[in-house]
Picture (cartoon, rainbow, N blue to C red):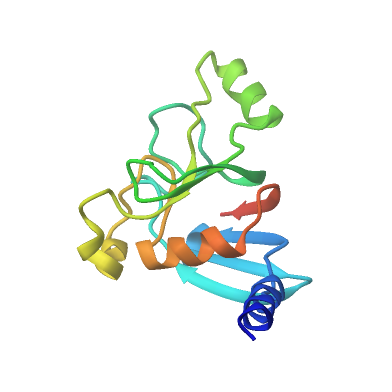
Length: 157
């Protein structure tokens, strides 16, 4: 009986739809997880402290725009949990190189800074990251479960 219950729980966990695409729309401050074109979840987000325009160089506090891949995870991040965005891509590197600057990096989807989870949704009152996409810790837990490594993300203006 216990074995059947465990098998049923594992099957239910495997049947949870996983995202196969993520879209962030900076002007709307949203992050949407999709599976086969169907919206699974949409979150309100905070962005880089200077959110208008594409990231051009390290330290500009802009969130990048373009097509990237979500990959490396850090469960012991300075920001609760984080999932790496593959910025800079080749196009970003070329643009920065032409300007003689570093494109930067370490762009993440992440929760709140450790010790500040109590802020919850109020963190969205102002864009505050260095260029990342920030959600609440509870939302980060959902994203962590629903978004497999290698999922494409499109960040739109």
